[in-house]
Picture 1: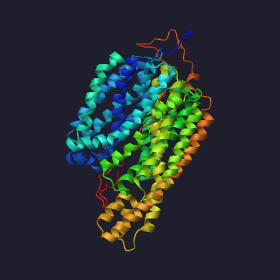
Picture 2 (picture 1 turned 135 degrees about the horizontal axis):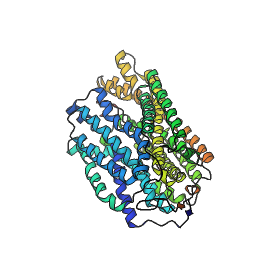
Picture 3 (picture 1 turned 120 degrees about the horizontal axis):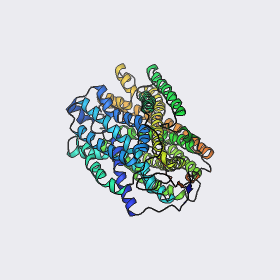
Length: 553
């Protein structure tokens, strides 16, 4: 095979318009993670799901999405990334229609599973296709920064859009908004976005696909269940089972001529280190989100819609960070920028240790904006390094691995930071509760801050105020310890970035393309990948509180 090196062509108007079209499915897929936050009471009233069904209405989408990312990334490399994107858009649109008009909880759960399948095709496909379209390093870095900002912004916008739609329409409207965007995608992508298929990949390995699903789903499910209900033997066994299946998956990849995931990727400089750094970033940004959300609703007493609107402030404040990071990366080594991003995030968590139940709203939002800005900087640059370390024909798998690491990091953050906060809350709230409180009320107040607010609702004013004060102080103390833990993880991330990524650049993988590389539509260039899928909302119907806030977001 001969190699020819040419100057990288710059993208023009057509590529940028095609890129804007690709951002539509990415925005909707990320929004679907959080769009159900305010719709639960309406769905419960109409479909009357059981407690277990309500959990699965929330969780099915995220579990299926996480479990199929690697499979779909590899499939796109084989059958064509644009073709997979169009198939995924069709499935996502059809599943949205089914979800909007679901007449039972079981139908809605099935529709959410189909949405997860569609989402798993769309996320790695959009990022891998960006690689085909932007050959110039500066343009590619800017595109990846916008990709990262769109992904994180969609998660923040989801609850707000849901609240606005539910003010005027029935709950199915939160799914119907997906359909016009998917139709636009199906009409425009064939004309604006080039196709790419990887040469010489062999037949698709169904057994490897099943093993990857059997490895990822149990691990992520077990970690999330421990975050929700604590450590137990069955949950630990589920995680161990997933790890054992993962070992079988790795063995199969080592022994096949055409593996679904080429393990040689992990020997490329910067690839494994970038994935590890991404796990740490997602650990903090997803794991701490529940604390800021609950503080807005349960400590400050904001309504769900007002809390969602205020939660947009950090997203708006850091909206330009990812593109700016791409510009800086051409002047400053990426390892130093990533280390600086972690240091900035650590400073944000330090600010959050100063939050008290009586603090002004701006204190919380300032700390959240600082740590979010630092971590968005990290995520955008890490995405670029991961795809830059992968050859063009494996961009789909590389993108899927990054997103899978995001899911794992987010699940670990929810489990560990959530456990730290819960342990502090349960220990300290009992010390602060007023004497003479009935034992069942003490038990309910000890479980969650939402439970304490519900208990306070049924008590005389003086006694209820004492319960509220004790619970909010205990929750804030838990937030402080979780912030300190997150800060320490950020410092570890800074050291890891400087140690593992110093000297690593996307250009370390030659940008020259083999002269005989079969490409449909356009020549691929080396490009990057993101990482971010936030936390699932804690299930359960909200209960009223004295402050007018729901029991548990």
